[in-house]
Image (cartoon, rainbow, N blue to C red; front, side):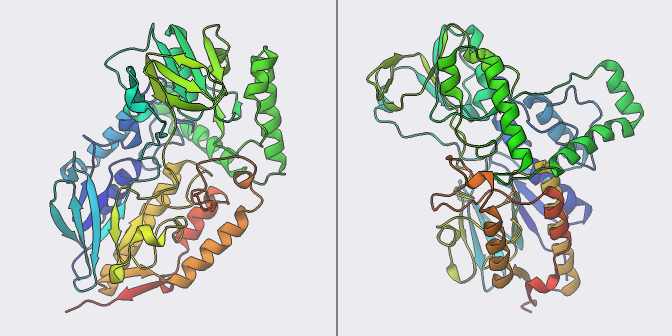
Length: 483
């Protein structure tokens, strides 16, 4: 059997890793990307202070280690440059179709192929589709009354308006999550006034970061093992994770974060407003060297009264106060629990993925979905939160490559994961979620509106990789060729 043709949707870290696997295997593939080039979230998110919260030596491909990371946690431009370099050096540029948004995927039970439709109405057929869209692609923007009458400017962090600086302006920042703790310290000092609207406080721990010296960088390049030690240390630190609410690690991290808050914030009123009532990890764990210092500036105000509407001049809160501002920044994150919401996916027998996932997305090891032959999802349901996502993506793309090789060896027209094995897997991990910090007393993006945790994997990173590597072909249904 000839090798199947493959469409990869998305040119971020997952799409790059998948493309490298496909190129190495001699597959005919196309990488569709709605943006202008490689990079994914690291191309889209250019807000001030944007950086990774995973150590750089671990947030990189094992097959393309970078000895020249400038610091422990690289910033957005450096990560984007790394991803672009890897993609180009591995010959992926000739496979990229940029500035092209895929809107629909439709499976044919007759031809055993997928039709990929773009926003421009162009249709192409492929044997296999790999979604590398991930979970951080659709910005969440609250629907506040009166937003259309505000005379200032508004933008989401993933669409940062660089045309006009926030320096000297009155700025409203909505949200206190992973993006806000980076851009607020970056812009706070230069604003005329900054109001940070906080719905619920979250834990922020100290950020232990090192800027590598020229001597260290030369050492990493000359002796790769020196850099590998940093990578291995980060890997092992993640492997120590225990997500149980009552675990020693949860208690320890909560104690450390509380001590950091008390050490950094002297004002007892502000300290009270910033003190969470949930354990570390219930919301995404955060770390920063500048967050609390920014909030303590005299012209920065943390507002906890809920926003009820926009006015022409700013925002009105539930206590009746009007906050006059020039710019409103939505640091409100992404619709992470609504997987593949921008794609209309129709599978076997005309079934719709949005219907099947109405109560929350689920897949077998986050990678395959019953009823959708020849479709694989990278950074899919329940693959988040336990290690570097690059590590997870490598495990997934190696698995997809193995399945495609098996298709060729078997002469199969299609491969589909079984329903029973998928149901058993998802029942298991939902049981394992019960006593974790993610299911404790806070709102977070990990959980679907139904209450089901659809993003997190409740075990360690090695458990995910080992289980995926040990998957039996017998857990899948293999369709013979039609001719």
